[in-house]
Image (cartoon, rainbow, N blue to C red; front, side, top):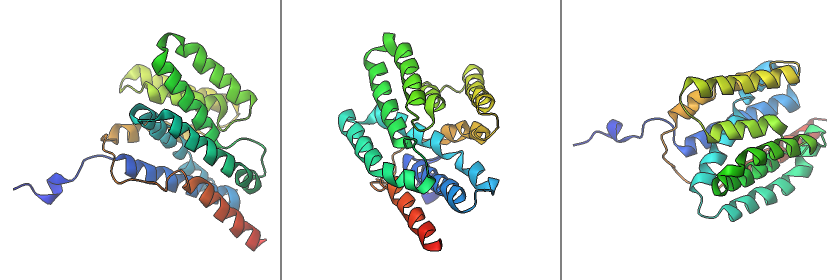
Length: 217
């Protein structure tokens, strides 16, 4: 008879990675809104976006309807934008638009592999000029995550992307994300429970943080 312990899946399911992404994002945003000088919040938060990217790549690879997936990202991005701008006092576009561009590129690269290099370069330029999410760095993350390989060459490319980002923005702010591939290794490919709340959590938690901030001030 198989024991209960041996029946449990090893590694992290997609649901568990979603929970981890949501929690680290919440910690990051709590720090940004209420404790801007507490670096520990922001360090933890650096894990969040690469995990969202991992989930995007996995979602694109397994979705039955990429159009519906993209529409959901677009609608939530539009709904989130005024909340995002009010919470962080910014004119940048939120990361759901970055994920939407990434989804379009992933699907285009799958259908037209010979054109994927100019497509990814165009997306990097578009997100930089349009002040979308993480800009070219975010597109680079999506590319590397799409072609994730547990080898030295891939690891060097991952480190190089983060060093370039640190050099460009004059600081090591995003360098804690270097450890995220360790979580990629732990992904077991299992879906786990459904998480219908996941993308709605983004505008929802921002709205809550904004309301709390308004109440305190």
